[in-house]
Image (cartoon, one colour):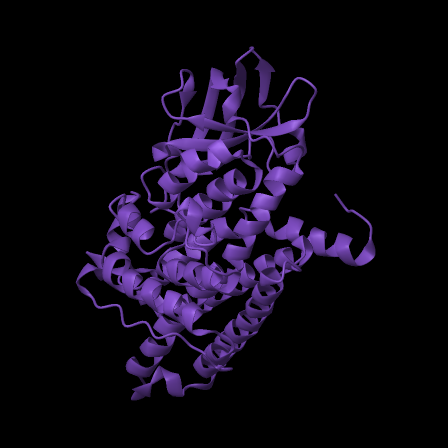
Length: 395
């Protein structure tokens, strides 16, 4: 049964007293999210990951703790939180599981954010409160079977049909797709301009086949979006979004959340490894007393601390509307790589126990293999930094 009968003993490391940089609301949001993860998520997540099934029972709880649209203004049902509180919430959710954090990230950053930023007042009033309450679950359609890192080459298109448009094409690797009620889809009009459309479940010709046989994000539902001449009413087109800037600004929001989230996964692996090293005895003493294991643990806490400071500063800049896309890219890339390295080192420290569902490490490691690729691959983020500092694009 994995962890289901075990208590979640997680204690968060804070080597540089970063907590002192947080205000009361930020700490409160983190604590309430952490409590929810310990009570509702940790006891069941191993079983769902082993079964490769999404725990739909958690959606209501995610809505109740404010994980859907935490930064959306309260008038539209959101939490009205600042960017650091939002980041801490993502950190705690990913400490539980990357797939559950993905569900929240998609709902807030990739569905609610574009409707709030690019939608009409009618669209905001119609969709945002129901998304915030979890009554509606959304997904985000940008990536296509043949176009991942190069979204400008997308082939999904729509043509004018009078009071509606006719949408044709397909999207792939879409989190939440199998059970989503709406999809924010990016497609080209007849002039080749990229626009955002809200596609609703039940529209004829719109299907969402599930993606099976994943070794990663097993407790997250992934699927395709297939549009076979779907009639979408013109009032479902986002009026303020034109070109790639629309979807890319959404990805910025999501990447920012991932930069925080990855720290949570790293913390969980570190905390597990530290506790194990103190308890596990070999050659008559705890393995925590051996130099090589201390090296592993010391490097882990150092990397986590660096990542905490990076994201905290990024959060301050984001609150001031000064964070650049390139700064967000740097944090996403650094922190996910850091978390993956810590997961691998922690797995080694636990020896064979590290591969079992008794501990969360292997699940985090496999999840992070997706996180390092989605929302901009590891390599593309490196080239974004390269372009930013040299002024020359390498892609």
